[in-house]
Image (cartoon, rainbow, N blue to C red; front, side, top):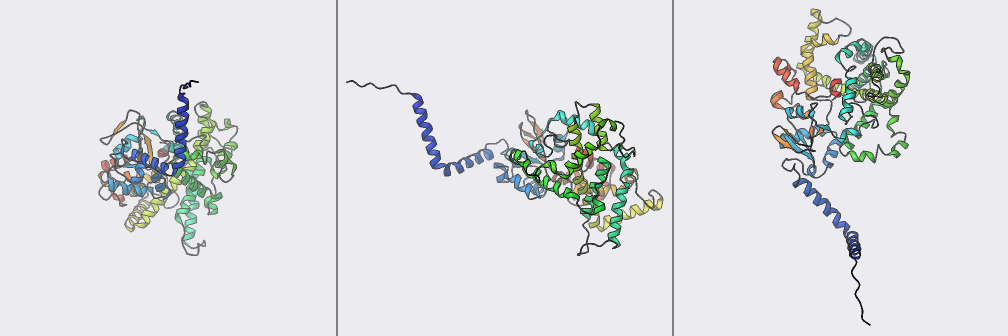
Length: 477
């Protein structure tokens, strides 16, 4: 009998090859895994358009360097050291560079230049209702900023000045009590001034945002661990923000909310903001900015509610909550940090302290300042050395130590004479920018308030390149 050969079925070969490949991978995965990681590291380091820029080896192959640097809480110092070692442009991640040029930073952060925010910002709470700082959608950001600009304006802030006088008086009384030993201090005989300034910042923002103090100064403690909760949240935001996809496995994971201590809705500031919203209902009663206590002031929340009532389709109730929440969440930390920097530098410099005391005493003697009580914002503006100390404190120690990162437009962009392809992430760090010797002088590392008083035009030039996030206007970026 004659045998016949059946035609070969191509699918049989495919199945055979697939099976063989699967078997090979299973048998050699201990070798193949590291090999693939090595090949990917070589690709990202040597084949990337950013390969020409120097930086740590680990940073050019993975975002792990950024995670570790942020987790150390010294990333601002790391970036200063990197730029001094490598120059004005440093590669700090496979697709990210840090730039030290203040001129380039202005371009990156300017509105209308189409350098959009990265996914880093989406990690910050509340994720379902981003505030102005965390909003990555440019159109939504513009809508929210338009409404929030009203209560954050200098005119609005000055109107609220008299309502925080009691808080200022309480802080002064507490510090005077420590100084005269009327209040028993800790066993070591010292007082944590930084903590008391943080309590003060919280209570002031409570008055500005919700027309009530949170009671931090009165109780002399971190009420409901609100500050500690924000610190923990900010640590999470900073670290996980370097690898945003991890957030979906953690805080955005539905299982996360099953643990009460982890659910962000249970955070003190979130609960306070939500309770204040409920207290103002029905919102129509806020249309004239008069609160239930009938003192006639228009606080931040009242102004935001008015904005919502005027254009509910553009500024939702969720936006009201998000902006009010963000004012306390981010504002308390940056405000406290700025005050801490001012006090630390002035008290650490006998010369600066003596000059400041002399200026204030002279103003009282001349009648420019009242001999007792609080002074107004306008009166403070006339204290030139005090203003110089404040600017210098914000320059030397910006409130935010993390990078501010933007994405280069699709067509690419030229920054400081260098072309960066579209999609590149460009980071700027205030601690680096404020130490540019071309802008701030050869002694840019030093706290020297006098640099702001030498020449008016030079002072304007320096102020143009200040990138601190220590004011409401800065927080609206």
